[in-house]
Image (tube, rainbow, N blue to C red; front, side, top):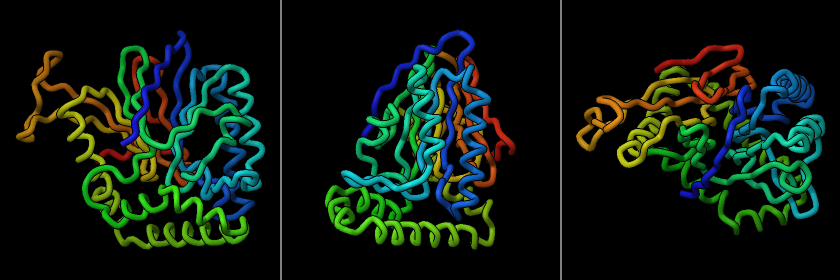
Length: 281
């Protein structure tokens, strides 16, 4: 699993923001434009206090970057992100499962820092494990196979042979069917609990060997802020030198389709903010 180290020295009065799953381009041009405007206004509202911005994947419902061609649209968001980086605010873009095929356009034109995997983030003595969050933990064998297939270099080569119009139609159709399947779940909360159990298993396993203060993931479209105890190999609370029952926190950034939620770290505390409150499981 590819992980990178990111170190941020957060100035006094500045905050780090985490957001994801904008899915711009879906389900229609008109609805996407409304959502894009809302995202830009949110950035404007916090720009003066923004020490860094983390975009944790699925910013676009579909993105395939050819060598000389990129999908049209999103120019207002691109302009705002370029303004942030030009002013010295770092923007970190983590590829999601909908926008995994990124080349160098974001880096060269917008000044973004792009990551294809997970990363360790260090801020003010705190350690974060951040990423899109898909394909982690046990189960989901079918999804992991498809993810591995899409991430393979040969898949990019074959897809690049398609005309951009054909590629767009195929990818957007697949995305639409996947979203419809999720919406048809009879008990969405039960479904999400099962999916988040995979992430919980991954985090508990990681905490057996590593000291992490915060996990921040996206992908599930289900905003959440939850404490996670350190467990030993027998599944009991792990004893540490720092405390008898050390805990870390898991934050899921939710989405900007239904919840308009995001995470914010002020140097001391991590909070889940936005229109809707956290779902505690």
